[in-house]
Length: 374
Image (cartoon, rainbow, N blue to C red):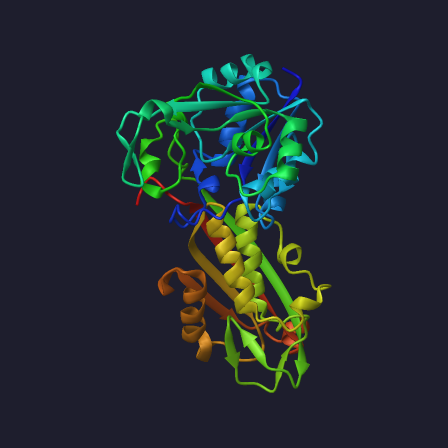
């Protein structure tokens, strides 16, 4: 049907999932979960538009995966994320689902669409087989249903409901509270929502992550500046000069950041921390690296090792090697032995040889976070 927009919600922080990688970014073979779910549902119906609602910090990275999907930054709640996405919806109907429902069967999608004219919101539900107690009182379980997504709503009705109602966890609740009509169809146990890490083994439609290895290189160069502290690899170096830079100029950490981003196809350090932004003036590069390490983990990767080459006529690097390794190990959350540091001079050639600055080259190897092995 060409009068329906599909919206996939995946802007959450996955705090209850309790794994290193956010659930929307766990890899299904090579695809992140959000893309696997989007592609699967897109095969079930010809939607006029597909919208993926992303965490604001991840939206630029998500855009690298598809030119056919429209990406919208999510809000602080599911309700706010839906409001944001509805601003770009022009179709009569909108089908909204959570990325956490990874294995929705085709029959549910077809049944939602088939019944779309029967109410303002069509909702899949499951019957309850266990005895139900509410505040120590038994409830007739025939009157209790488990509500699932996707839910298919009339776009205008949903927009009006969200403008008038607040604090609802799904579309049907908001529409019903706004005196709209709701029609229930049979849901599926295969549409189980992935909330906690122990539930992931019950989702039979998910393939294990690929064992591919990803390599990225980085290079950074900074000239010296007198009367400024020098930081290299997160360690303060005993000199009376530092690096000329917008931040603290830690050339080693900047190079590592670029190698990590290169391995995941994530751009470069300037895209995350532009030197035109005043908030990064004199920034502590250790904090920048912590942010990138967390980002990399969030979007589904694990760091394997780092290889670092420092080209410096001065200062002498060898006395600081061990301290730099230890500091980087803590920042990168990997064992110290997985960080290799090589130091060399430029044999007095070029700007390095003239003692005008330092160059650092780095290589990073990463792999997908293995959610199957926990």
